[in-house]
Length: 377
Ligand code: ADP
Ligand code: MG
Image (cartoon, rainbow, N blue to C red):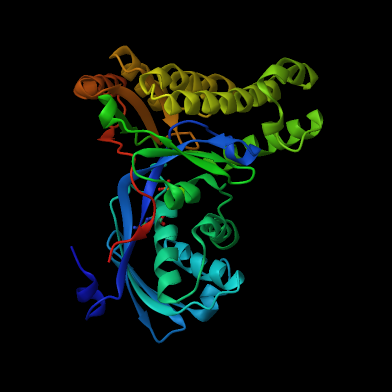
């Protein structure tokens, strides 16, 4: 593996990092002004960086083994760069847009967050770059303002219509906790989530199912929710509470929109119920909520695919307390909550089920609720 010194020569000014994340529960609730409950992973992206004369930014990634120059014009023009360097240029662009002067820099990027698995490697990259450029430029960007800035980068420069969940998780999460986030006003609470102390483990199963139709289906779900909110006369589906669900469903014109709304409303309630249990230290008891979330995504929101459903079913039949797909859907990762001593059994059951269905072998690891973005050196 290469190093900062090998690529750029000399010593860096510092090392910054930001983690990947998983969402424990609360799927497709973020753009409905609802609730989510992510936590940061131990897997993270690091940016080893040095201020340079500028205004230009030279970035090297150990994953692509490429070094890319981003000049002032490219950083000022959304769409000027394609590929991974757009995530870096987007941060520069969003900082400029927010009125900050951004110092030129050499940035060496390394990561152990799996790419494209739904663990938000793109936000880990952006959040780590933002930390580096903020400090190197001697500007003051409060931590609470950073998620919106990264969202702006991804929406306005990279051109991905992502919500606020991932950036908030990568920046705001604390070790041993999940982040209960209200996506309407970004108010949040750190909820204790110490798996090891409870004798539990959360197995992450990367199904490696190829993502298909992700963007188009995401956009369709989003507009279905917006249309339903208009019919119901509420600003967002967040404003439909559980006790008014039946009346809301009766007011909708078709079965598909009823199913979409039922997912969002019941999912918000499941986040609230999960938070109550975690506050009370009842970690095992969240299992059925995780599984109910999966069923809702499968039957009502229709965003799962066969390998994901197979992983959930196999984990549950091997004794997991609960299991669900995490992330936007159509592939990606499954979470399974198990006793720490039962991890091997659950893992083997999932592998066997994948083999007998002819699916690509899944990758697995244990999720450890970890610290959000910061500076290492
Ligand atoms: P996810 O965020 O779920 O991992 P995305 O498709 O949103 O999936 O983001 C993955 C993209 O982010 C990669 O294709 C690449 O362009 C970029 N990326 C993330 N981390 C790195 C890295 N360490 N080096 C280079 N590119 C990266
Ligand atoms: Mg992403």
